[in-house]
Length: 169
Ligand SMILES: Cc1cc2nc3c(=O)[nH]c(=O)nc-3n(C[C@H](O)[C@H](O)[C@H](O)COP(=O)(O)O)c2cc1C
Picture 1 (cartoon, rainbow, N blue to C red):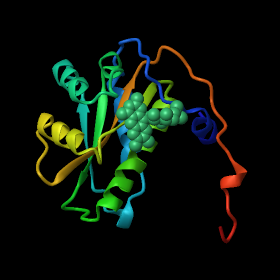
Picture 2: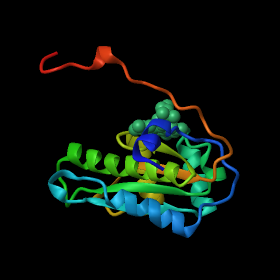
Picture 3: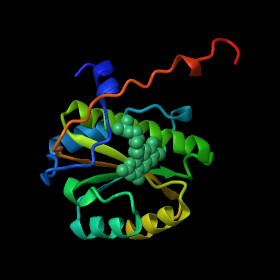
Picture 4: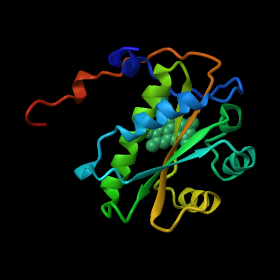
């Protein structure tokens, strides 16, 4: 899929068939995450691939906006390493760039995906860290829930000239 077509047609998909994505597609999506830019090229990111049904069930218990996760069957938690990047703003941006790359790649592969936020909701950060047994210097920033989609959603054109400013506000 052409890059502009992917960007313009990507939507959050929350309805899945239940068929878990292939290992090959998973690797392609992860690789796209690694390719994202990062401040000072530190790449302070780690990825936790979650397919275990019990872990998935527990996530849905404390994260109310992940009801689609069991049917998707797979989530990739993108985590920032505070020891590598102590500026939390940069850390979140680095992980977010990675998440967006993965969403677009999933879409390009014909899969459905949705970004599920974790940081900076303290309860979600704490619950995810405990559940995934993350070391203290690793912060879960967000999850890419990905699976075999049931439906396509219509692209939305969000371009708004009133929000574009040239040179000065
Ligand atoms: C930081 C962030 C956190 C999000 N968290 C969730 C979430 O927990 N659950 C969910 O279903 N969607 C979540 N979304 C997806 C947004 O709801 C979605 O991107 C937005 O409604 C626009 O729709 P679109 O992605 O189809 O263009 C999140 C998006 C972002 C950027």
